[in-house]
Image 1 (cartoon, rainbow, N blue to C red):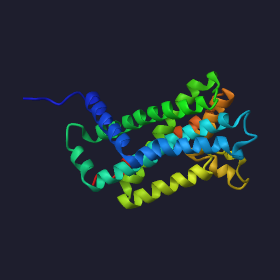
Image 2 (cartoon, rainbow, N blue to C red; image 1 turned 60 degrees about the vertical axis):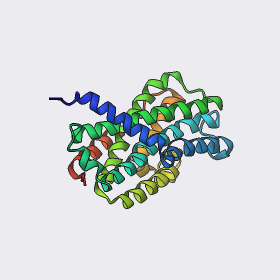
Image 3 (spheres, rainbow, N blue to C red; image 1 turned 135 degrees about the horizontal axis):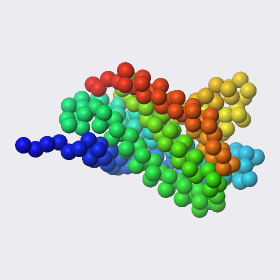
Image 4 (cartoon, helix red, strand yellow; image 1 turned 120 degrees about the horizontal axis):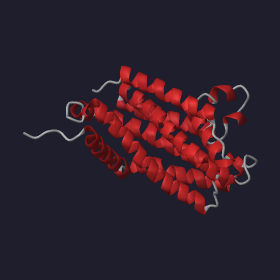
Length: 247
């Protein structure tokens, strides 16, 4: 009689499958790689970020890396999970030895793999453009990226698990556009209009963007950003567990 593989093995295998599926999908690839590269080039070639740092690339790169995290963990994972629900994939997998918890952890592993690919591609492109991140901020930046990935993955699963797939597609793309444009992820929240700045500063996009800029531009650890991201991750995870529908 055969027995199921250990949970860790099942999670890693499913994570590898999910990551491969995301990277093979043309729409996901555009969202994960092409759009961030275009954003990086656009921010470096235009005067939008002039005055924020010693050079445009120094302030642009952290923001685009934050954008990559949101693209993969929130939009990409949200859309993929929403359509998995529609076609019964989630309901089927939740009855296998992988289980519901293994399925969720596998999706989280897939986000980490795709994000690592993004960091290599986008970070490499930024280095070629002259980006020189502060070495003292590399560890804080890694922590912020992990927390940001957790927060946005939980938010993506919450949306995908409570709305219809078509609504998930619309909501995740709309939220991505709004947060990319005015969510503190590219432009610091403090530079937005005084009425909006305090509210935007509490969003996970602003927490991740501001935290990465503090780490990679100034070499400082932004405790407030970490606390905000941890809070978003915890609340969104609890909400997803409570309201997620598997079919």
